[in-house]
Length: 426
Image (cartoon, rainbow, N blue to C red):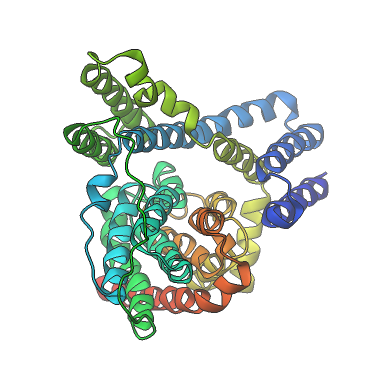
């Protein structure tokens, strides 16, 4: 029966990786895989259905902690966006030369992604590029740099990338330590592509003929206020966890409640029609629930492999065959360019128990960097890349030829930086 479980997981993984050519939503595949794998496990498990149910309940609690966090974070971002809050940043970007704009966009994306998630940051920044650049080919190249910068910026922050968030919530990394130890490597991951790209990007910034105006639903004060409220809510979460030592999902639930209350007070004198698109309840309807369902399915599917002992056994086999933790994690990062990094990291969390590899160990810090940035090498390797692909109609092979080598150079530059830094500090 273990063979059947492994076969289901491998087939599901292949379908998830080939989501676009197969035209089958990966969320459906993940849910089917989770249901089948736990069913097969319960049939063959020596601990019986009752024991399997207890394991499932425990794994569900771990999954729910991540899912609650993601839902709240996505809702906060949607509320900020519905108020036009991101215009606080986009309206202030001024650059005459393309190379200057490239560096400005790169750094804004890098730091914005550390506060938001990398997919949301990519969407915001690509929307900005449509207001700043007329030429579509130039926007394609900038979109590629945005993907690299968003993934690099998310990797060093506990709330910037789903994989780092998973490690943070799971207790594998702590807030200040992951920021301190991976920031420099992530920065190198961005700087190397920017330096190389600067030799090829020439010319002046030519804005579009016509820029669409905002909706006018909110005043400048409301835009600015809700921007800082939204960003403050997200920044509050790691501080809350560090001070109280309570789970992050509780902190973000608290932050979401405060934001909801403040929004109601801010718009209490407006008509129902004026308030309609600004309500937090409306933002809940706009979040990407398909992605949330995918997280539930894939995390529960991977949890089966951990519960039945397959992942710890695989970890032991890999350690014997390869032996070098750094090489193992580097391979995980490269593989994440082809397949989704979420199940990769989830599998790794099950393979290496905290009792053997405690919080802030080399393997967890290095994995946060590699899994977070390796997905930039190919357009389908990260949520940010998939978002950019849809928004700017980026072709797979164009990205692999024009952006992939830049991302690969940045990936290995960051690896070298992290390893040198780790050896100097330790």
